[in-house]
Amino acid sequence: MQGRKIFEDEKKLFFSFPAHVPEHNFYRRLKQQLDLNFLYEETEEYYGRCGQQSIDPVVFFKLCLVGYLENITSDRKLIERCSLRLDLLYFPGYHLDEPLPWHSTLSRTRQLLPEALFELLFDRVFSLCVEKGMVSGDAQAIDSAPVKANASMDSLKLKQAAESGSMPLANNENDPAGKEGKSGQYITAPDHQLRKLEKRQENLKESPGSLGGHHEKAQLLSNKTHYSPTDPDARISVKPGKVRRLNYHCSMAVDTAKGVISHIQADFADSRDSQNLPAITLKLQRRLTDNELHMQDLLADGGFSNGSNYAFLEQRKVTGWIPMFGKYKTEIEGFPYDPEKDQFTCAAGKVLPFKTYDTNADGGLLKVYRADYQDCKIFGSLVNYYGMSKVRVRGKAGAHKVMLMAAIAFNLRKHMNFEPVKVKSMAIALKRELAQTFKDLFLFLILLFPNENTESQVPTYLT
Image (tube, rainbow, N blue to C red; front, side, top):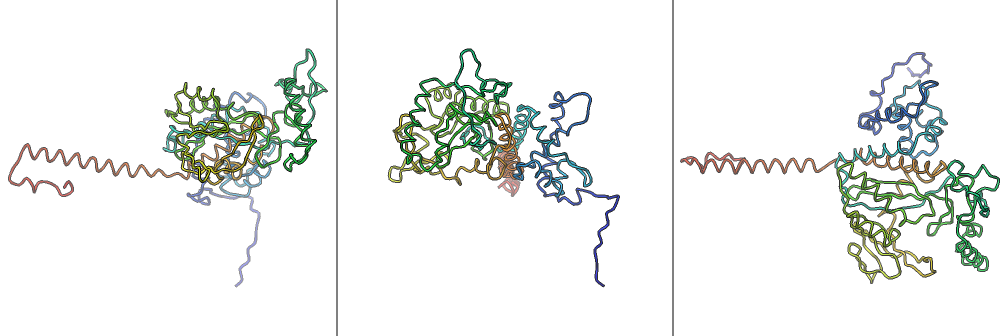
């Protein structure tokens, strides 16, 4: 007899998530190992005593984690995905017939909660990695990369000339977009920098071929003379081989033991790597000290190089493995150079071949040595798989929250997939050491009290 399935919309449904979400499921295991109840006490001061109940802060952060773990950058799509998967409902604690929060609630909550709360969550997850033996702490590698801002180059506006007695709206935290005045932001760059910029733009107009194939309008815009009213914190920057666009600067530190992200922060895209190194080092050392770890070596590329940084690291008792910036490169310990192949080798054994030429501030040529993406792929993983291809919020604080959540998701996945293999080997070594101790003690007692059957008294497992 032919069977036929008839769907009936039942009024009552008895459903057990543990029976339908397998024990090996990632989110079920994460739910068991990740305790976020500390967020209730940490967020209590940000809520009133009356009024309508807000979204549960633990639920908010769990939903955000799902977004970065699933590489979903839209809050609307995130809610849709969670409503269609049992494990994504089970992780934040929702029933089948229970409505999920509205997507705009996630956006508003993300704006209201401070950066310090996101940093606290990052510290907790980092401590979990330390407890599992994934972090050594002694050697850290730092790098940086631009991340696309949520603003277009077409929206840029020209800054107004500074007026006597007027405060530049660019530095007004209460009015970052310059909405209080009709004139927008004021030019704060000194006159000699503006004259140099004007001369350079005139040279570009006279020789269009030197634009390198980029759009002419993009080349003639500068952070000194233009700003984005959409996102005033975004800055114009360019990556080698890419067109100019509005970006944020992501600076990141990674522990060299198992590749755990030990620090991440958002900076203005027009800042130099060397300017950000002291702040990165201080925050990194604080986090390592809180986990009873000590940093001895710091690895970075030539962009972080300058004399003050070398002196700073020396004062902090940290050995900086940073190649000197300039045309002439001396032989640096830890970065051997092969003149025949024209390439360096980093401390991790990865090859840094010659890639292209660049120019310094004086117009001189610089040779660029860079490793392949497969060799240094943590930034690529965050961009391609953890929702950091673009900062879809506005403001430097919002960009910092995005980068922190992407790093938290990255560390959590590494934490869940990591299996400590040293525990077994240490147990075996301890067993052998105890066996040898008992053997020595037994033989010592035989020497003290010898008899005719001395050899027969030695157990076989001790011989």
